[in-house]
Image (cartoon, rainbow, N blue to C red; front, side, top):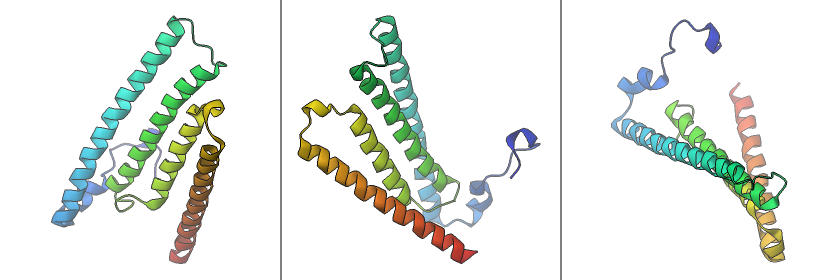
Amino acid sequence: MTEIKDRTECPQNDTQKYWPVMTLYERFEHVITIIISIIIAIVIVFALLQLVREVYFLVISGVFTPLDHRVFQIVFGMIMTLLIAMEFKHSILKVLDRKSHIIQARGVVMIALLALSRKLIILDFSETSPSKLAALGFVILVLAIVHYILKRNDLMQSKEAA
């Protein structure tokens, strides 16, 4: 694949290439995926605007001190929400690029791990019960193991195919 700066023409995407040979259901699935992708993009833009607005008001009001735990929780919770939405959009774009079918399990697990990481960032540990923290830790551990197994399985399948 050539680098963007070296391109002389726009590469044909796989949708244009395969549309004539797609079944009706594959076309339906593709159109729905495009609609979902657009909706997620709109959500990401609004979330980004809300983040910019929030940081702006924190800076203007003089409350913005990154070392303040509460400010850190608010700002990084919003940033993590954006990252989760972008990872979700990325998994949808793989479907549009015909690189995978529907949603891959590993992507869903990654999104869940990001969501739990966000939860840990915004969590007030002084007000959270030890059992809830243990449960969150257990779920994160299980998801990490599942992610590792899925990734290892993907690597083994790609070696077998080669």
